[in-house]
Image 1 (cartoon, rainbow, N blue to C red):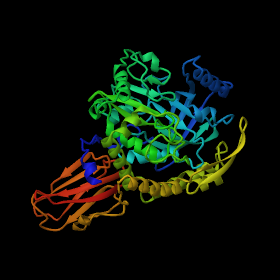
Image 2 (cartoon, helix red, strand yellow; image 1 turned 180 degrees about the vertical axis):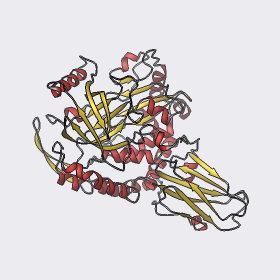
Image 3 (cartoon, rainbow, N blue to C red; image 1 turned 30 degrees about the vertical axis):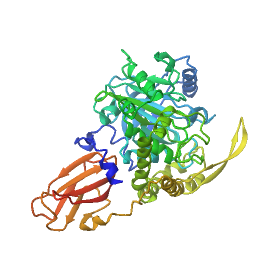
Image 4 (cartoon, rainbow, N blue to C red; image 1 turned 120 degrees about the horizontal axis):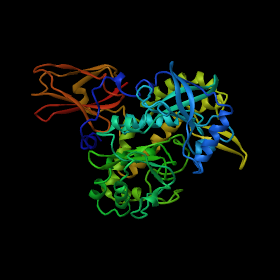
Length: 515
């Protein structure tokens, strides 16, 4: 597996900017529950919020933000924009006031931001008794080296009334693209409805019911999107697909979606993703979105053959599965996720700490969709809930527990991979070569120390890679030295691979967990 990762090396995109100066690092600090207080003085403001949302959904009016004052973690703003958002998580919430929301910091004050962020998404955890599906899915993907939004928890108050616990999710905008890609000037397309990515001709208007261009709208050029969809549907060679799509990035997201049993994504339901064309190489990047329905109890198998509950074959997935090399890489990515970030050893501490951190806020959330008992149980074990739907009547639904799902799914996926000739080693299993070096502490925070046997070899070099195989630094110990300290404070938390090598061909590896 390490050879596969190292075979995908490219320059690490991490920047040396101090962590506190990076936009959103304070807002998306997971170590505490944030607090947002909104004040809305309009009479019957709730009726207006609902009317504006319904009108925008029907295409009668554009999306409209209402004026509000805001206090975010103690910082006050006289004027921000506030509106309802979402689709299933909004209308599915019925008469509940715990709708999903979007805050626009610069809607009424040009250039206004909070912690460098212009917009803040507030997800209501609809259909999620654990309150963790969105947050843990994004964490898994970020820690595995994928570009995915950051998330943190907040308590929301409106006119001093506690509205409940929400998950704040990072907006996909120029700030996001500037932080993750070579440029923020590329075309960003948002999937706004179910799609197969089917070829519908060269006219952009044929795709506007499924996609919306979010950037460069003053002088739009849709040719990159048309070219991409054309290649996806008329796939002939691996090189042709690689020319329009960061294919390894997509395969990694696909593996995560399947492992997480996120049926509400492109590979099954045909939705909840974004495309960003990086101007540096004119390739699209696949950005995942909306995971409140992930970690489900649907019966999809790991290997997508479309002989199960899938509604329509998706041409991009078909292209992957019909190409032996791409399909094998997809399986290797799945295996790597099991070895690194998708297992209870890695995720267990995060689950426990998050549960303890947010539970006091959940206790007082009278607008929650589930009881506190459901929350307590579903963080760890399956929960069966009776739902009294006004249309379909009462029915029961079972939600897999977060921790139990991860344990069971890890075993299931590992067996399925073995049936395909791909064998994964658990994260705790180390290669014999590791005995030649000692690295501590592990997990680590600010710094690690590596000790190794004297006379290891000439011109020893230490290389650090993130779990996407990207190089994040290298060091050359002094001649004759037997230890070296490596700084970690500017690196994001996640799983890393440390390689020690010399000019005589010796190579030793160690997995590092950076907290």
